[in-house]
Length: 257
Image (cartoon, rainbow, N blue to C red; front, side, top):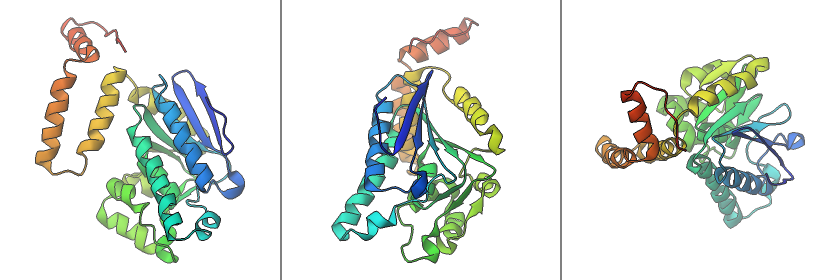
């Protein structure tokens, strides 16, 4: 994997771990950091890995946008920074691999946005989540986009309007994360969830992820129209054919991809 200033990237087996490594800046998302995240996810997405873990070094997962970077920009500059951040979030959802957020400590503003943008998230008991703009001067407009799609309207409003953090147990109850575990068990829990989420045909899984995001939040009729066409086409993929044959022949499948 490539060399980065603000990230540590390593591969073990079929899993690539991208670790944000700006602990001294609370893993805040400067332009340089965002560009590295974008490049790392694109590189990982083009690999034959089946899973990607987004992690963080230091006591904080991510404090969101780097205000030193934001404050130095005019309107056009801030808009460009937010577009770059949005491209990172969309790339996380566009790559064919299953992406799991490994969350410890605080994930605030755009850091919370990162968690909500990942396919899955496992939080340590020490984790906390917030959209703090509601009690400050710069409201969390863009972080609220994926958070809303995870927690629903009323809970989003509480997060966004109060700006107060919620603990890991509340994040689990609200649907922002999939699991909460003791800090010492975080890596084990992620490995277990990722192993289950990456079983089966790689091509089928990648198409499935892409289609789930395409139909989310659309009217039911439109969602079914998308799902019907994709599912019909996917029935002809080698992995689908092997899965059905193995079921009918009462044997374990041998995945071709």
